[in-house]
Length: 130
Image: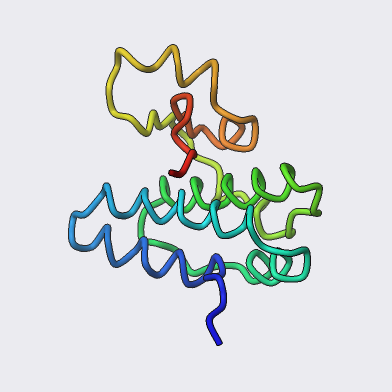
């Protein structure tokens, strides 16, 4: 029986994309995880975030993943797992995910707090899925 991917599986897929230089596909996994999480029942949501993922090999994406889990949990009033607060999930330098300086102001305004506090800045709608 098919199950929604958990954050460990998502992290592995992101790491594989990053290793191939497929950054757009890596980010699509973020939106895909959010979509499955949003549509899941409570028990499935808990399973999806319970276990700490291995590093993607990128401190930026590791922080993005922790921010995503914290954001998803907060959105659905689920307690975030403890692992999201570990120090290595917080960047020392800001990362504007879009990469476009002209979008920095938008990202500063619209990034959810679970990302901002990690130094990850997303433009409005970046986490939306079709």
